Image (cartoon, rainbow, N blue to C red):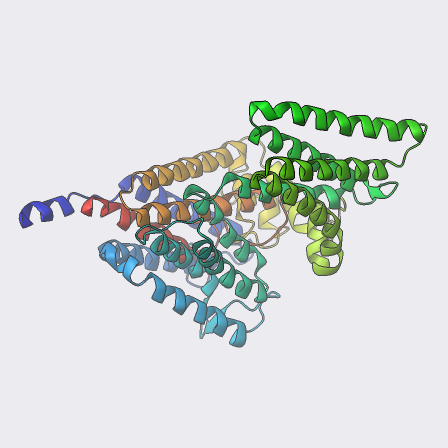
Length: 485
């Protein structure tokens, strides 16, 4: 019996397909870091440790050693010491906040001689491990109030510490783990509320300058969306016999708005009309909640009221809470400002570099925008502009296709796990990589604000490469040992 069990344990194999993609990524990243940091006047070899590419090669070598070591550690180790790792990670974040010097406007790096480490990078896999440990507890139910509070606190506590270090981009990566919660039973309605909040914020800020009476265009459009969303939710949760009440209610709302328009002889304050319509919808939802005594109608009512409160507070948050440079980044992204010499400079130069690459690119080390250093941070956060300029549309597309294959493979590995621990951690890995990919590429091409997060395996940096390597190879080790159960 023991021999049979041992043989079963040894059947697990490392997913070499994923390892091969990892190796391709870090090698391509090394070449692009050399291209991005290449100095025409003082050119050095790719292997010269005085250059960025040479140092990245050192980080690549240590990462491979680290990956090999992680694959040799027993899977139970990661689950057993997940909480201890979380405590150590939080302690490092607190220490960093206290003793770290200010570098590029943030206090997020621990400097130890020639080595600089960013604990926030390592906190990504630590949070994912801790969530996996909690979800693996027998009979764990996410939607029990106590459990949900614990899970959210585990994510939000380090998030706040990282924000205090002025590393907003890294902090937002932690929020990507909400997709793990969604996979493990978090209602889709909560995810919908988050998406709706982003939509309200964008509309309220983007069209805040044009007034339609009491409200701005952004507020009016947001109110219209709130009404549409509420009507859709009511329709979804009503039984057949209740549909007639909804039709009658919507008819009353339309009639009331039409009556007001008639009384005002079509010279109405559109903002006032929007508020009247929203008020009628709110009253109608209150009626449904009392008429059928169902929590769902009360939740929809809370959604409507909360949505309007969020819309009205968006401008205050934007103007009085966000820093001026953060406001400008959002304005540039939304097309409200150009600021080509300020906050929009990075993105503007990045677009020029990518566009100049054309279909097939200018060739390795032949990029003009990147070689003349027009693009700031072009070997870290904006490394993709080097790919676009030297490899062109075809090369950039191939990189994105390879990332898509990588993400899909990780999802496949996550779904084949035989334990909740493995599945939850696997989806944590997927969420973090996917968020980094979408946001980094989005900010480089100007469709997302510049928040400063690296492109996995391509951007220069030891902490980044180590963090992504640990994140990935812990999962590959868990996947290798999945047949233990």
